[in-house]
Picture 1 (cartoon, rainbow, N blue to C red):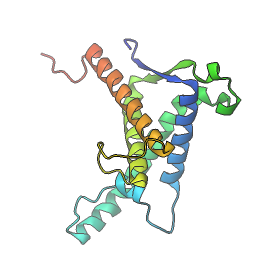
Picture 2 (cartoon, helix red, strand yellow; picture 1 turned 60 degrees about the vertical axis):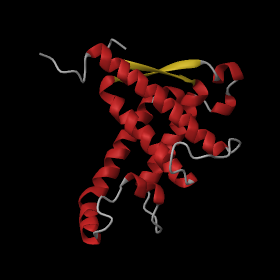
Picture 3 (tube, one colour; picture 1 turned 180 degrees about the vertical axis):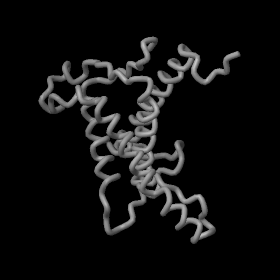
Picture 4 (cartoon, one colour; picture 1 turned 90 degrees about the vertical axis):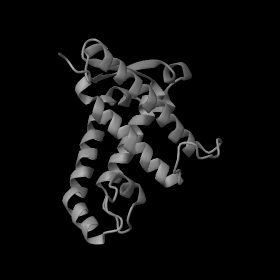
Amino acid sequence: MTDGVIRFPLAVVEGIHLAGLVEEFTDVLTSIGEEPDPGLARLTPDPYPEDADASAEFAAATHDDLLDRRTSDAGVVRSGLTPFLTTAAEDLAEDEALAPRDVVIPASDIDAWLRTLTALRLVIATRLDITADDDEHDLEDPRFGVYDWLGFRLDGLIALADAQDDVSGAGYPTD
């Protein structure tokens, strides 16, 4: 971590699946559907719920920019996961699929990673009707497993980013 990068360890199969999730997320961000998408709505919150005119004005001024930034951030993450895309998960032997591999994230890209994993998790939470971290859910339902796994990986990435900040002194006042 001292060379200006964060090494984020993932099993090969995790990297493959994360790349797939980011690709699906990008598709959601860039698709324009007939029906309002509650997941996208969660990513573009209404700061003025009691004032329809102010809400409309704010949305007109910020909605597309927010989604463009999220799409750009997702592209940064997708690019970082490119080494995982050489093989399909089902083509790997178990030991190959579980082999750890470091994703090398330049410190300048960490915020894009954190925003993307958080946004992806919010979209999934919306689709699963999760409103709080302590909501109970069916542990056998793989959709909730993906949500929980993203939370675990996000926590790990935050810890690595915090450790990088400690090493570089970022975020601390200097005299």
